[in-house]
Image (cartoon, rainbow, N blue to C red; front, side, top):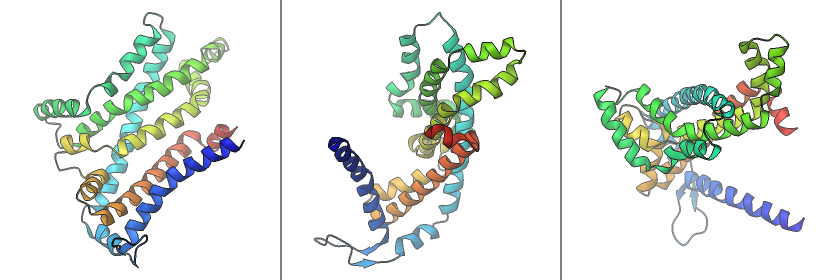
Length: 262
C-alpha cells in the first residue's frame, strides 16, 4: 500500500511540476537568476499572444483539422478492424507489424516525400492535404485500440442480433457501437490529441497557409522566448482538453463516462 502511494505521488509530481513551471513562465514579467520564483508578475505575455493576428485562426485551424481527421480515422479504422478480426488468412503478428509500420518509418522521410507528391496533386497548402497526412499518422493508434476492442467483444453478440432479425445497420448502432464505446472514446481522444499536436506534417504540407497552435508554440520555445511559448502551451492544453471532452460527450452520450467508471 505504501509503495502504491509513493508511486502515485511521484506520478503526480511528474505531471504537476512541468505544468506549474509553464504557468510561472507565462505570468513572470521579471525572472532573473538566481531567484527561485519570479520577482514580478503580470499578463504581459498573454497580451502579446492575444495580439498575434494568428491567435484565433491557429486555434480554429487546430480544432477543425483535429476533429475532421479524427472522424476520418475512425471511419477507416472501424470497418478495417472488423475485417481483420473476422478474417483467418493473416496472422495476428503480421497484422500488428502492418499496423505499426507507419510508426517505425522516420516521420521526416514520410512528410517530405508526401509533400513532393502533394505538390503534383495540388494538395499542398490545403486543408485536405493536411488532414490526409494527419490521418496517416493517427491510423496506427486507432487501429491498435479498435482491434483489441473488437477481439474482446467477439462476434457472439452480433450473430445473436442477426438471428433475432436485426439488419446490419441496426446491429452496428445498437450492438456494436455500445460495446465498442470505451475503445471508441480512447481511440478518438488519442487521435484528436495526436492531430492537435502535429507539427511537421502541418508545417510541410500546410505550406505556411495553414497555421496551427504547434506552429506558433514551437518557434517561441526553440528561440528561448519561454514567456509567450508558455502562454501558447497553456492555451494548447486547455483547448485540447476541451476538444477531448467534447469527443467523449459525443461518443459516450449520457452514459459514456459512467460506463467507463463501472
